[in-house]
Image (cartoon, rainbow, N blue to C red; front, side, top):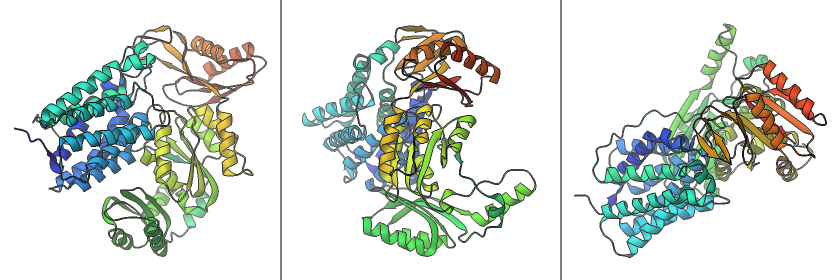
Length: 562
């Protein structure tokens, strides 16, 4: 017989079961993407987000008895740092709110659970600037409303409570196509809402005693990143490394870490090293320092709480290995971290994919490129790591994808020692326009205003292929068709890439546009791209037409008009 209360050890098992169930269904959830494009990633994003927390929970679970405070910190901080994509960020905020509602209780009862559901929904809605109904938010709200109704009725049977909450949430999920017409057109329910349902159903199965393998797979959450500022290799080879150990860890706080404590801790780190980054959240502190005695940094940090995610690298040894490889012509010398370079007033981080587009951003002066985009959305922690590497007082972040903006905003809220400005670029062309319009002589605030005003003048179209049959935006689409997707929907469909691209550009054009930029992808030959440019120049003779190699996967062409 199952208990009608949930303690910390049980909650840990339930959370891991929810994570495992979501992981097992991630590809199915990916296929619920509204547009039938080959980069549906909601299931992947949500899985990577919850698995970031699950690894921390599993580490606690392996240590034996768990207390509710430590468990809640693991869930909240792990999902917060691992959050990627809009759905992942919202999921992390649901967890964050939920853990706030239960962390003070050794045992969770139905009234406590109902209040925690409400806190979860409140926190998640606050994290989204313009919440839309018919999404994961609506499903979560439906669950919370039902939970409150059952709690107020005096229900004491936890199993029946969870069952009825899940039934109601599933009903709300089935209604999402009626709330968002684009879901109805595509014949799917909201993918984020479905992801949440899989977490809840995994939790319920485990609560009811179903045998579940809680072993976590090795799910990588890292992104390769390209650092782009120039380095003199000879100078680097001869440079002396003053502090030899790159030391990183996370403090799981067990006492108040206010501004004074943060300043005192930073002052201490400065006395034993350099390249210091301290990013504080209410529950965790992320620390990076170069020092000759990592033990001193660790001892000091232990005064504030337990440590996790510890990593110590011998930079002198790595430096020697790199020099040896360079002398043997086995590998190029990697560039030094930006934190070791002279501090500047303003830096840039851009999310990009494709070697050609990376080079374009590099040529425009972007300091750090996070590899990612449509096929793999960077996480909040990827953003924080990039911020660590840019040694500037103010840093502009260009997400270049609407599904990455929330993660960038979340990273912005966690950084206290640098001014982070997120320019809400939804496409690569918008990002390029933003950085082109940066004027060094203007203030950060003036540049922010200018960039935000300029990116709205950029129309973007992207050509890819359909992974399933569907009917959307009044267009019948067959699996394998090529599609031209604009800022607001599908603009063209057909069986020839060139024809689809030309039709897409035609739909994008208006009389006031003067410049058409074409970025061709990794699967397009230079000759085919040149032929397309010739057609565009002939048809739009009053416009300047630029052709550049982008090298992006999945999207044959990315086109901007401005």
